[in-house]
Image 1 (cartoon, rainbow, N blue to C red):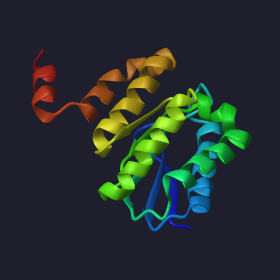
Image 2 (cartoon, rainbow, N blue to C red; image 1 turned 60 degrees about the horizontal axis):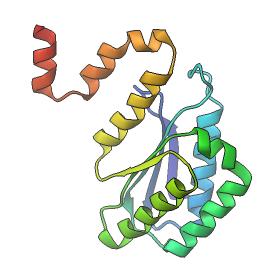
Image 3 (cartoon, rainbow, N blue to C red; image 1 turned 30 degrees about the horizontal axis):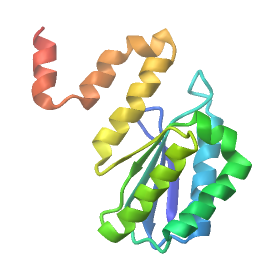
Length: 163
């Protein structure tokens, strides 16, 4: 399967990285595995982790119609889980494939699923981590300075350390 699902080494985020040509069925399988990892987390006190869907290296065989039916299939078996898991989608580098994943974002958003698309990885991780750190336990909020250091540009890190 042209997909790799893992837990981010520094952040409480499930990463689903797609590469090469991805069929609609492979996309569904990768998303189901990501949802499974995101909802059965021992490290997250809330029992869920946001999902980073990295489609940057995709040379997609999926059309907008395929993605519509993929969401239908995922909604039927994972609909409640999808509503609880925040998704950040990194759009494919190929403009023709990116159009389809913009459509995926619109479909999910219209159904009430928390989703947002990005062209780069860093802002996507920042958006996912921001939600996690703002909605989890006080212990995680106490670790906010480590999170800020991870996401702030170097100049802002230097200024924050001085103050």
